[in-house]
Length: 360
Image (cartoon, rainbow, N blue to C red; front, side, top):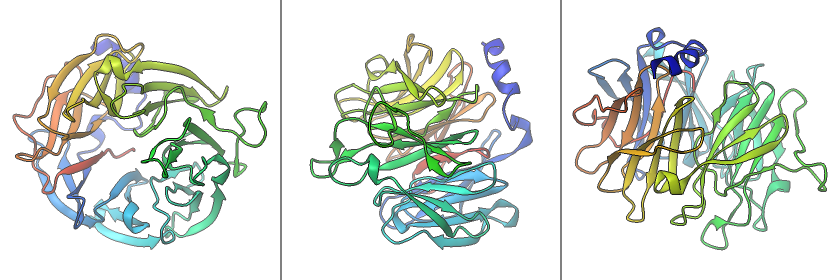
């Protein structure tokens, strides 16, 4: 198994020894959120509430800084770990837009998909201000909003997850979901299907893509995880080719994993980990073969909807956010064997929501 991982480890932008801490976004989903700093190595000491963020926030690392997307507050907040996790600036991206993610192009520009307005924003990395907006209205369903969320970049192509939920019907998937392709060099949407009128995205095999997508090491593909209709076990993980603008179909199904997909991470060609929720809303960490979903093995099951995020450090450790009522925090597992290294979750103050590695 170590031989399987070696080529992937050598290709990583940072090695496990090149950094010593990671960021955990925490929240109670009511009053406020926090940014807790966790040591990368055992005993994984936590600096609780190194910074304060919104109660609905995600974050990405870029060029030595952590960019926090305060979704509910519609602003960008930049934290500098070299300056005691102080806020460098906090800039509005426009009221009511509900920004979901930020991804940076090779030229340094930032790109922010919005959820409550049909827009993709280009932002200035110097101060977070909006430079230009690009409409996503053409990709919407009948309610007028495409629900764009997580994004990932491969070269000059930005891939944006487009859920297409019907807000007039309990927020269920309207019909189909897509990955939208944006040419960062030309500043224009890419048509994935010339046989249809207008500009089309890549239609996915499953609906409701909700997990952070993964870039594949070949520079042209991305892995997409979709939850489908909750309780139906109709989602899973598929790979989208950004050059052919097609999907290979579901390689891993929710039926194989044993529940609705929450999150996933690929550790090696034959090793993947996923978080799923069962019919009783109990969550589990499952190990599987990402090539075809075979060999699924449940490593941990929580008493409630507690396991919400999984992240790999690029080496031998896997980090899992556990929002358990009695003992919330971050659990650490051996990425090669799946054995838990922590005796209990490392406390993070508020319950953890997202684990951010210093290359996300």
